[in-house]
Length: 129
Image (tube, rainbow, N blue to C red):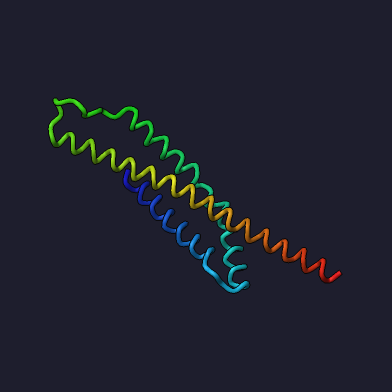
């Protein structure tokens, strides 16, 4: 079960690195190459969205069907185990949401860069006429 969260954590780290590379100032030629490569990789990496959504549904289902340890019958170890599972679930929700949010940010940054490029080309065509 930990492998899926390790994969999701690696994807979030990679998405964060790509988002940083896209937002750092760079010469136009380098930015054009980075945006082009990222745009090509966005479609195959869209698979992370259903994966993260499925993980969120799994967390929700486990939360709804979790044994509650709120009574006085629970031992200290059971209470600690219950609290740890709650903390892990919260961490994993943050991981899933950040994967989706970073993917959306990267998509929008690439779209804005393409729009800027199209506007610059249109401006150049208008000036040439």
